[in-house]
Length: 504
Image 1 (cartoon, rainbow, N blue to C red):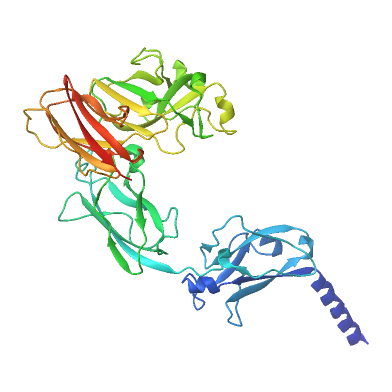
Image 2 (tube, rainbow, N blue to C red):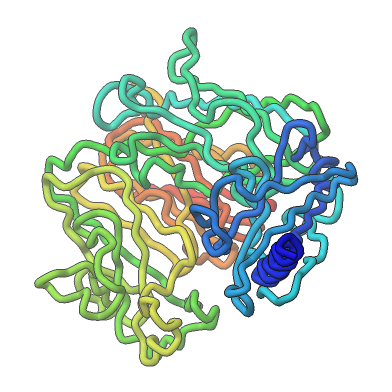
């Protein structure tokens, strides 16, 4: 009788114990990941991780290998039964499947369950909800950067003793993943200023991806070392291809030494046709109260403040108000070109600097989403730029909401020309960049401006004092529409105009 009683007691205990657990079966189909080369059943493991782990007796949530799935029948459907205590009934949890230690399912939000007695068998899930086989190809990319225009020693140059350049991107917005290679570029031992690297990528054939070059350390370069121009693009080609990416000159600018004199810059912005970037609607010009400029340089506020009228207070100014009244550098009252002269004092940081404009008008607060700065209404991303140099005067003209043409200007020889010249741009037609060469025989103010077919000035590439010499200017028209344009050289009483064709 005693043995029968003990057996009966054990059975009752076992039944009671079983009733205190709610078994939940997790299943994940790994066939697609195997076919795509992301999972090897011989060497890889699949775990279940989530915020339920401590509740079922584990030592941590979202980590560890306690809940390792298995595939005993070899059908590539991995599963595991996890016993949830009865006290978790009705509770909701999140989880994900993980390949090895770092292969988390990338989609968001995580999967969710609500524990329901007496037991649960969850539907078979595909890892990362990927139920279609995607065929990947491999490309090897050889990058070559020519830094000769900024290469040198010390401040104001890309100095190989303290600076480096890397390839950023490729994996930003595409199916591309980096398989092999170092992003940091290495200087060619036989060709100073030429830097190279090789990267092997995996992606879907026909996909395309963005990339840029970036210099380090950030503080020695304008725009934190990033190239100023829009991202470059690579189109994925057939499997096994080795591609020599065209040699490129980086659009990177080393910070220049401090100014040795006060420099006055005339900021001008044409607000005709301006759109508020928050609403994409035209701004009623009759409601404009003022236009302001804010930027990266300390004189322009170092991007401080909240893009509100109080930023213009002299006690802590981070936003300069412009005017359209014909004063303080404004050339014509009431033409919707708002202007202001701003002085960059001796000792201020030289070189390129980012900035943008903001328009304050009646009702502007209601057009900005809650929590956003109402006057930060020009660009979603990106900025204008100004190159602050040791010149008495600098003049720039921008179109509100239109990126300034990215330009670089360099003197191409030390000879003094006998005459003014303006050469035909090349290439022509062009898309989107072209080069313009010109010569000035005497020191003085030089302007090269771009006009559309209606005779309207759409860009000022350069407007500053230059010494006599021959120059080359690179012009990027990525923000402009296809069509015929005219470029005009003006210096003193001399002027010369030529035609060019932008084809996109």
